[in-house]
Length: 209
Length: 209
DNA sequence: CCAGAATGGATAGTGGTACTCGCTACTATC
DNA sequence: GATAGTAGCGAGTACCACTATCCATTCTGG
Image (tube, rainbow over all chains, first blue to last red; front, side):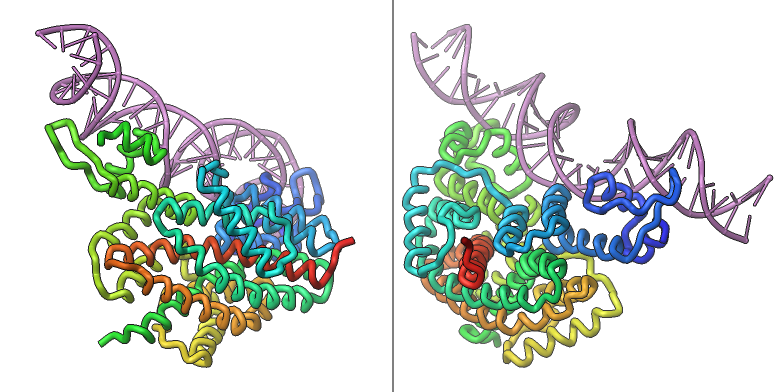
């Protein structure tokens, strides 16, 4: 198919498709002549994936490129892919060297230790968690740290579910994409469910007239 | 204190403080003369809160203003505040009228029903969840819906924890701020813990050499 | 008391991101 | 052979979160 049909089928404007081609988030079509190329279903699918990452995940185009490069360079080691995608998806606030940082780092390390989790203590997510605690502390919400064990328990169940999801993928390609979809769409789904659960719990505790 | 000290104590540039004053996310100081005003600790705290919402929560300034307006207009009904903040915090992708939308709406309604949750089915979070399912479906990841029950169970525990956190607030003001901090910082903390749990679970299932 | 620094307020400019447009030199198709 | 579509490219747009500059006024240290 040519670019107009690709646009129609994916719902993405022609100009935007060209932009994505330039930015390397969409592979070029197969050249049939110096100024003609033909695209196929993989391009339609890729466009949908890009839109999902941008619209649902809120990723900048550069991060999308990083993620997709990982997906396109199949590495059977799940851990590797997981790491790259997790990295790209992260909003990393500047690592402030707050004096309270050491205490927060300690708290996170203790938490991970208590849970018996086997994950690198310098993982970006751990750093992010430290950042959250430092921020909370600066707002006088030191007690936020107390909810973490319960959050962590919930996340353990979620992660189990996530890995089950990966195991349900038929092929390697599908598996790689599942990592991306699982992380990005999963984050959104989780946030949405959390809000619904909050409303439910609030109504349970403080019924409205 | 004057603006220079406010800047020093909060770590926010003077020009940025002026910008925040213009945008209404920081209340004006007390005027001492036609072109002098004095600020106090509440301003320092407010600036930290704004930075937390922007840096950690990724909220645009306009959303921050909405959130803070709610915090500043104390309504003892927790549900109301919760709703407003949840709304402001949401990234709402344009509600597509995909043909697959009806099925996704059905799935979400069924899920909420099965869980016995008492929340409005037209809640933005429910709509967002529908959007996620539609997106997943368009990518051929229809089976994502299968993980939702487990996600929901985890979120129920998280929400319980969240409401406990609110109940731990001493005053009404503190309570209102806890809603904000709980939602925004909580989302980040949850996402970070999920990633750590994923790494842990992945290493458990596929140990690395 | 007075010079120089600081302040509030306003306007304009910057840098980054994600497109979007317009153009040219083609090619495909009716 | 007229008309429509295409690739590629540079420039332009819109929005956002600041950031810089200016000015009239006010504060402050000597």
